[in-house]
Length: 460
Image (cartoon, rainbow, N blue to C red; front, side, top):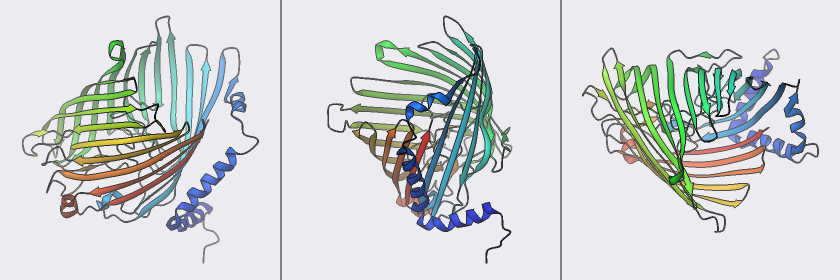
């Protein structure tokens, strides 16, 4: 018999957990509620600006933004059974509400509050599943507008998305996005931008307003973007410094200080688009008191063509990425590339694979039946770049015994859809199948995995 004095939140969690075997039910309820909201006669896009931006005085303006995302995930083999495996599912909700105060041309403040909750997973919660109440962002901008451009000094908790998001991303796929307690200075003109920053990631805790600074990690860097008109492209140049007191690789665990220098060229013309990037890393890794020199690298080439005159305007795309692995665990070097804070999801919606010791070839076709609906079909073939290094799951977790056998990791197949009936409403669905190689099945006891994700997001 259920205890009468049991807290309401615990009783609700138990009831939601019972629904998980029929996990589509909570997702269906959320989608139905949002659909009802869409068709409400009281909801019109033109009514939103009246309360989104409020003039307080002649010099002060208060504005609001926010989003509500409902997301359901299901897999039949969590993490490919790397940690015991088994069926896993959860229904997640993320609510963000932001407020910005602009005072004149020189000062603004922004505060974003969040609440991220999830039903219990069959295989245990992930660190980014739950954060009941938190400050997602909270910073002050000091601005210096000139005829040449705008200088800004931003101090406080903030997101720092840069470039392709391969090294500095927002982790939007997770229930709690990534933010940093940082100082960031930028200079922007209509064509160019330079950012310099230093900070620490935020340490996520499950309770209310108890997140703090993760002093075990530190990141700093310089990032510049400028156009190259003759090539119909833009070029990014960057350098990062990264410290982590608890990094784990196949050859061991310890502290590291790693520097990254890199460049990216991206653009598009006549239906073609491209995005190519290369980076080199150096530094020092100290496993168990020893000292290893870091020498690592990565390169990626993305290209596509959109046949805009064809039915459903197909885009034919191809990606190839290489992230170096460790050549020899006993040669005094660490050659495993570390992407530090990459976007999530990275390759497919399951967010499994970390870009370390990896070669992947990723063709895709994207169809656009209407202006509001897109369908993407993709295949991703993966190998370990070095046989002496292991296969890494995100975020940077080497799989036990994965150095044995062949370099082939397996194939991923995904179909995903995105429907945006209104600018402020978006639905997503994805199905991904990870076909593990026979070598990893034999030596690392990994198993194939089916993954399903569906989400609905309302934003303003």
